[in-house]
Length: 457
Image (cartoon, rainbow, N blue to C red):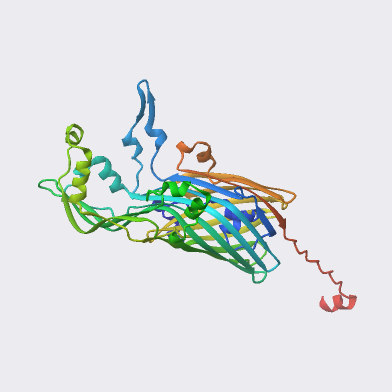
């Protein structure tokens, strides 16, 4: 398992890094359900309870490739793609809690969240970039497998109900069932997709069984229905036709007063898209295409739509309206937390995200200092998105019953987003009541009788 999570060529981060490991923040249970909450009850400020925004790229170096000259801006594509690896990721994610609250006693805790989520992830290979940029000249007589390239962009509403149970002083468990309402989706489904170039006439041969799927009332031409009334907007946001389920779960083990070990699984589920689905399919088979010269495409009087029609006819692209299912990118996290001193904790987390049946790993090293129960500061180092320079920090502040936190998993990338692989920030406001800490009275040490001492020694 250690070897699995140490592979540098596949390292990618998933979701917020700091937030799950600051248990004083009420919203942390959404990302680490294994721990029993420190709060007896909490209520998130509507629309400001928890806002998490992140974007990342594993390979493109925009700052180095972009230069300003006297004649204008210049983008050097050779520099832009020079760091492309065998497998790469380009993604963005937002998670905004519109409403959240929780309550419970000493053994049980219940919580609720209403969130808007958007996710986009493009997983691509170096062969795809080289074919796109260099053309097929460098692949003459070769077959290029493109089936591992995947793309999905979606937004959905989420209603989650969570339950945490403290089994005893050493064990606790948590679960969160989430109902998903899909709003928009564009995604690929490549069962087979490879390109080869003939040696004699350089004809492109495409061996394909692939589809591009989409679903959205906006794409269906129902713009007036979506924007015309509050009821229509509500139907768009909570679209039962595009329904799905997901599950979070976790277990925590506290072997002693210094160590805490947790295992959490997040976002294991899917959405089935039935509202206005559109599928562009290339049925299983082999297709040949001789290509279009760039000069011909620019200078020919024929309309560009003619070329598109020609491409469609050549590759036998079929448009259908079949429902389709997409999976969320499930995440796993194994965490070890050690109390170094009173209020000081060292944390190591091994993380993995599922993308098209591939587990993409990352790891986090974190130091947290709790100053009482009203203030906490944290700093992290994370190996993610092919970057070794991911350093983050954040603070949590409690004033009376008011909670505030602001965190960034990569401070340099958040301040200078074009110079970094990762840019991320989390922010939230809530009100809460802390759970009372049971104080165990020390037993008075018994002094042995004089005769006992003589007999013992």
